[in-house]
Length: 114
Length: 115
Image (cartoon, rainbow over the protein chains, first blue to last red):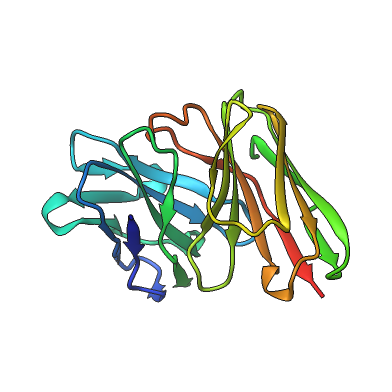
């Protein structure tokens, strides 16, 4: 069975700081990887996704993530965060064998201090 | 603005009540999902419907009963719930459930409190 670990439960940063949120998954086969974001009072929405090809994926709002297969990781990064990035971030994985199941991590709450 | 709507947004019910959650997607998708989001836990997949057929029941207790009359509508019927069932219930839809590559679009959720 797949599992997703997000080790940072709550991250607090000042504006303009750089961000890296960790995501590790356990699954030996081909995977599809996602980062979702949930802004306060809003619905869960897709930030970026990786299916194949270039392991460095760029998403919306200046976010990017790098798939490192050897480390089973898909860390989320942003060079300079803004107050509006305050949200909860979820990493998710699905396998590539016609399985529509998304397995989510527990989420990381990001608080940006102005 | 989301293409997936859920009603009601908030629901308080007693353990002996029967209520239903409704989800509607306006995206022309073929698959719909119910998730449970509890504090400090990963989102838990409950049910998956693919072209109106249930393809996944993730060991969900029978007090939760899904219904999918067509590809655009999904219901979750609730009866004799327990306080530990209090959570945010999220509905999602996706275009091609067989590929695992299409992103899921989520609704705003129904905040359920069982008293």
